[in-house]
Length: 419
Ligand SMILES: Cc1cc2nc3c(=O)[nH]c(=O)nc-3n(C[C@H](O)[C@H](O)[C@H](O)COP(=O)(O)OP(=O)(O)OC[C@H]3O[C@@H](n4cnc5c(N)ncnc54)[C@H](O)[C@@H]3O)c2cc1C
Image (cartoon, rainbow, N blue to C red):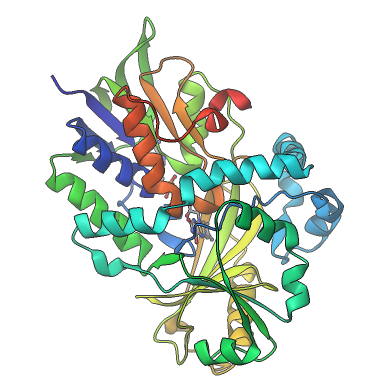
């Protein structure tokens, strides 16, 4: 008898996990209250980077000195809403501590590297299997700086990347402009990570993966999971607002909404929303050839099928607080300054704004592995800034755990018991 596994959530993590489990011969039910790949999911609106080099945690040594600035500048690249401060305090303290020493961030980078190193090839294979190879492109990922000194000021970040096998090409101004003619001339230095790739339509990609899972036999149920029926340490059923679903195993992949479900599975995890925004300019007059990360904006500029997307900003606030669209305006302004041939006045119907929730743990590592109440429930959430890229490797680890095989990468660092 094959195992019946319920996958909770159809973002990139749930979609990729469903496919891995089907490959292993499991019977799979995906439960999702929204549309797979829809705007409710972080997987829809992200920067679309499949970046093996995104192993540098947000919290780095010396960060605590910047906290007053985060509180005072509501439109800075990282901000904390005053109202949410009391609730966020425990998370913030852990966040600062997790990056307080070089050895801590080295450990985090190694654990992230295990999830991201082969992200481009895993996504390429997944997209081919799902019949949508055109949604993944490999043009490298380009980091641009006003001058070499600005790159050198990020020495620790680039050393962490080098130590974890990331190679790059340094581009002086002339070569940079040859590759990226549309780029503003205030950027005079670039770093190209050729191994990086991107997805040209993350929402459609996730939707395609779910359709592929259905074609392999998965069933998709429109419902919201509310808890679990656990009897004598065994999972009997997943509880939903549409009734109970009997099953042998469950995977919690509900993004930012995973915290309450983890609690129902016996684990108190520290998970906060690092809210992020995007702006998309439809039919842009100019666009970069490869995705670009300008050092002074810390946002991904990526040409997607919907237009030129700038995705970024970190806003620590409660999940249900209303969006502050001025933050998306900041992205739009920056985009115009990065590609000066974009017009000042762009018709409103060519511009689209979005806000979403990075499901973030304070140490920047996801939660992957068996739950405390029963090992029949597997956690697969908390991927913060890198969940799109890390989805396939996470899926692989989850399938290995459920299949009783030794995980192909150590999973201790991702354990829910670390909180
Ligand atoms: C602005 C921004 C830029 C980013 N850029 C990048 C990037 O360039 N590269 C990268 O790798 N990552 C990036 N990320 C991070 C990435 O998008 C996330 O880490 C990733 O999408 C998380 O995927 P997920 O499947 O865990 O969650 P989600 O995509 O949020 O999916 C969770 C799903 O679970 C469903 N759900 C919620 N509650 C329940 C419930 N009770 N029952 C059933 N289902 C439920 C939701 O409806 C949703 O569809 C970015 C994020 C943001 C916000």
